[in-house]
Every structure is written in C-alpha cells, then in structure tokens.
Length: 267
Ligand SMILES: Nc1ncnc2c1ncn2[C@@H]1O[C@H](COP(=O)(O)OP(=O)(O)OP(=O)(O)O)[C@@H](O)[C@H]1O
Ligand SMILES: [Mg+2]
Image (cartoon, rainbow, N blue to C red; front, side):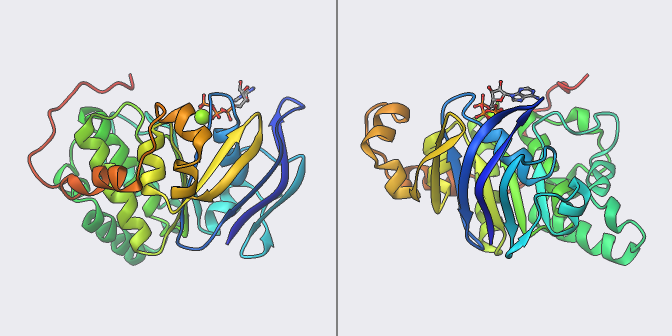
C-alpha cells in the first residue's frame, strides 16, 4: 500500500538515506528499529513530505507521492504524529484536537462526527476537553496528539517514538491504542527505541543502519534474529507475546482513574 524504492534524502544537500526500500502492506503495523542516527525519523519525514527525496520513489496505492507537498500528502490520508510537545499548552484539549481537522473545517457535520469518533477511541479527549493541554501528563498529551491526527480519518499513521518518555501505564495505553487503530484497518508505520515493545506491537519489522534497510521480515523473524537479539534485546530472545502483553495489560485508552497531573513541559 505504501512503499519506498531506492529512496535517497537528506538535509542541506547531503543524503542521510542511501536507497531505502520499504513496504507497508495495507492494515499492517511496521516497526522500524535501529541505532541513533540510522535515518529512521528521516524515513517518516520523507514520507510525510517534510523533506523531498533526492532519488527513488514513494508510492501510495501505486501512485507516486514523493513530489507532493505535506498538505497534499495529508489529504491522501497519510498523517504523522509529530514528536512530543507538539500541542499548544494554553489551548484546551478540544481545541487542540479540532486543529487536526483544519482541512475539513468547512464541513461542520463531518468535523463533529470525526471528533465523536476520536472521543470514542480516546475517552480522555471528552473527559478533559476543556482543560488546557499544558495540564496533561506526557502520556495524556501523546494520546491527544494521536487524537488530533485522527480528525482526518487517516489511512496511514506515522508515529515517531510513541513510547518516548512515557511511564509504564501511559505506555500500555498508547500501545493499546495503536493496536486498536490496527484492528480498525489503519496502516501504521512506527519508529521505536523500545525494540521489544515496538516489534511486539508490529506485524512487520525493519532494521535500519547507516541510512539503509539492513533486515526486514515479520516482527517475530526480526526479533529472533541473532544479531538483533544481541544488539537490542540484551542477548535474550524475546517473544512478541511479551510486548503484546504490555499492549493489552493496560486499561482502555483514557479510562480508569486519571493520571496525576504534571506541569506542562512545553513552556
Ligand atoms: N534537521 C536536520 N538537519 C541536518 N541533519 C539532520 C537533521 N535531522 C537529522 N539529521 C541527521 O540525519 C541523520 C539521521 O537522523 P535521523 O533523525 O533520521 O536518525 P534516527 O534514526 O531517527 O535517530 P534517533 O534514534 O536518534 O532518533 C543523523 O546523522 C542526523 O544528525
Ligand atoms: Mg529519530
């Protein structure tokens, strides 16, 4: 559904991606892992149009999208959950979420339906709707960031390090939400430092190194690959069941007792 072939891209004239080949089948969860600086975030940026490929092809349903603007790519249903701290802390949760619907702002009925759908999936959006986003914990903010992206009913969601900085409880809530999106047929491409969690959630795994894809396969194949096991998993072979446990052990997104409030880390 989404595929990259020989993609090169970088910053200020130099390439960071040296011919990336990647395939995300419809309704899959693909997790990219790899060392710092491997180019994982750059892959997400080039797909969402934030940087342009210097070579290669990016296809969505067989149509090239590599030369489109970020807005045009968004309109085709590909959305990136930005790195954390992307919410406006003085605006309410509801206002932040509604901003995700700017492309459909003239269709009030559709906007309302999408907001209701986001609230259904992430109850926190309704529960804390009038609170300034700055009052939320890190995990809650991550949920609102995802809710904002859902306003355009995306077909493909790109997530960069969704677990970064989250406490275990928020982490399992976010993991549970990713699993739910997958169950609903959304195609997910995520980058995750928490290799066990990421590959546990994923159906496909991709290992990147030095701007290239080194290894690709089912998440089990990647997780049980001897090199991956010793590099990222402390030498022990893991099962996806372990990480899947993290995804399902937690309460449904936003339900249960409220998380403690922490001061906004934005301002
Ligand atoms: N805005 C930028 N301008 C210049 N160079 C950049 C920029 N962003 C990233 N790079 C460089 O591109 C390379 C790949 O960065 P990228 O952020 O894609 O890596 P990553 O795999 O996501 O790493 P990490 O695990 O640290 O997030 C790095 O060498 C980085 O220094
Ligand atoms: Mg990164």
